[in-house]
Image 1 (cartoon, rainbow, N blue to C red):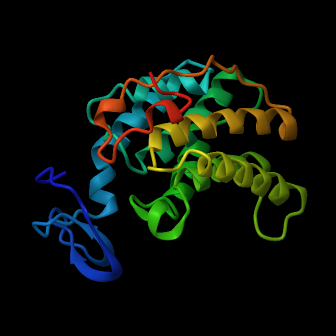
Image 2: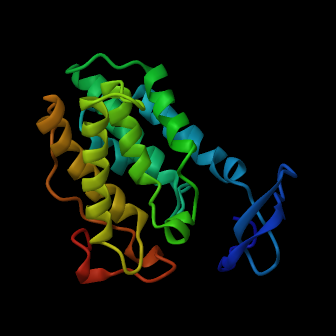
Length: 226
């Protein structure tokens, strides 16, 4: 984001200062030149684009919404921005489909919950891709799930478990775009099976970002490879 050099990962967290806002926090990821950008600053530009599309689109197909956002040159190849795209695309599609009343405030709530657990680079440090809690946030908002609920929390956790499994099958190396596409497929199935919410399912998307992958694309091992 600052000098375009490969990021360096530390095994143990160190105290870092954001180059832009000056916020000091513990983190693991910075570039060889010592540049560090906090998650808030890192997401600012693309989040404006994501929110603009999600709040104004009339599309009721989550794949159509997500693939459109991914055409933005401001979107990095990898990063937890894809978590917000996934959550926003699901909720916007439901809102536009009219199968359940959804407000922009509820979509913002999905983003707020996602922000609590989706942090760039931590899929490798904790084993949890940020798209997983984004999908979970959608289901929790839709069902009213919270600690102490019964069926609502089970539905949410079941969706999250299936998304995690689908993402696991696509690792080596990781690809946020493949993860997001697979997660949307799973989420659409879970919405129908658990909540009776039906969304259109596109034919399998064909990726056009293979050459941009910094850790090398899985190519023929990826179901979306072109």
